Length: 251
Image (cartoon, rainbow, N blue to C red; front, side, top):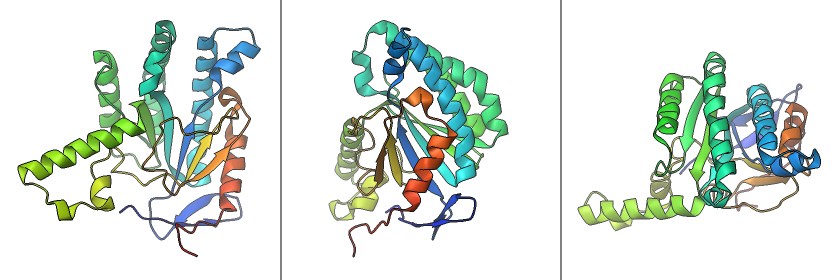
């Protein structure tokens, strides 16, 4: 099973994991782009673009605060229900983000990983994300996990189906199935479960995000709309997390 960890805080407020070398994993549900745009009497696409700008700042700041893995909820399996114009706008922003920022992210030693279903994604999107993963695979300052076409329930269902297939074929015995085994079938098997899940814009729900992985995560909610979330906001979350005492079911 993936390891748990305690937290230490040094003089400059940077956090680091204790007991392993994985560092901290923060996950963010980036909410409020539409409301941010509406407040400015602008279309939702304007808010999504501002949200990408906010993401750049957070990705740059995260490693300086002891965060080694940053997962972002970019597009859920339920987001396909949105108007087609908005969906197209979101994927166009992804294209622009990868094309414009990939070189900088690579230079800054950021590893990009994509977590989600590949079915339904355009061919050029698949090539972009494959190229990004290959180019940055050896980087280690920060792992940026982009949850794209992702849903926690479908991830668990697909893992269950894969386990059933391996049992049926004889590759896996039923008595070998435990929590550690199950996690090896999840899309997130290569990085630790999140220490803290942040949701912006005042909403207080998971929205099908990292359902298995969040079993013992801490949660933090802020009224700040995502386009206004910056390095100072992230530092506030880091400081808040440092005050938490995690017991993982023990005393």
